[in-house]
Length: 471
Image (cartoon, rainbow, N blue to C red):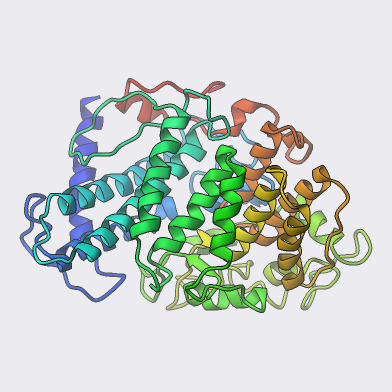
């Protein structure tokens, strides 16, 4: 226990040191000889800490976790060599998985550093900063705190049940020491996430680079959170506001342009910065150690032509064009998956992640509106807008259950290997009685597997935690 606490303290101090020396997002240079007490003195030094918060989201154990989620769900298969992959393909992840410990710590490092920035700005430590800029920086930090709490809740908490007491531990104050705390309820976690995002919607910056989290990113994430909570009418309204935004975000004409333009794409609402150099992006090049699932392949095959006539040779044929783009011989690229075309060992460029993009908001709008009992015609229009861009036939309205299933499948076809959303959809749809998850992923066969285990090392470090059922 003592060893774990000492290690935690060192990690916190290191996180702050990394934060105040980070300058990968812009060219602001670090200032030497800083301590926690005098780190933030003005706008420039506050910006350094904020850059560090963003950089923590690109660390190794955090930035390629969508691969694990793809293996745990219905998107893909992890092959040999993916760090921490044990048990993800078969939904039997051991509590001793060291990768989970690092993932858990990585998300809380984001939260703790964001808490530090919020604390220091609210205390007036940044001399000479305007009230508007201060509120904007706080909003960016609160977005990052909300996003990290949301991720942790989806990984380790019963995010699909707002009445559950098994949420995660909320951290809202900066700390250099480990404090044992019990899990907050799921509703308490959602309440904090909502409050942070609502602040960010009002105070967040606008017309910014897409590797920063502004007001629109906060509204987009809030729409998704409301969908998870079952606040469907509110989720539909927020998603529609994002779709009809006034900041110039719009769907790319071509699906392939999204991944060529990366965070410069007008469709990308929030994606981590990427550039040249060993630390210039995320670790999604590890996607070369994965492949698609048979479920995804068969779904893509069913979109075009006759059953079982899909072909990935050349440019690909008789598959959903999004699947062909990712995996055909001509387009798959050096990593074997065209969404992430850069290999950091063979290229000076790096890959980003696609945390939020506009296409997802169309599908959030479609699902939320349908579940709210709203206009199914409008829901179908949002769904078919995405299908039209992909170049596949539109769907017709048959009944509500069929429409909901069409939306779920469309999110898989649109977002595979991006942010893990298809897994969370699979779980939500099961809980809501729309399908049996095991009929799609046979080893996802009981509710205990809907969340990951708390790592053994985390339970040792926080003896107030209760392990998830079944582990």
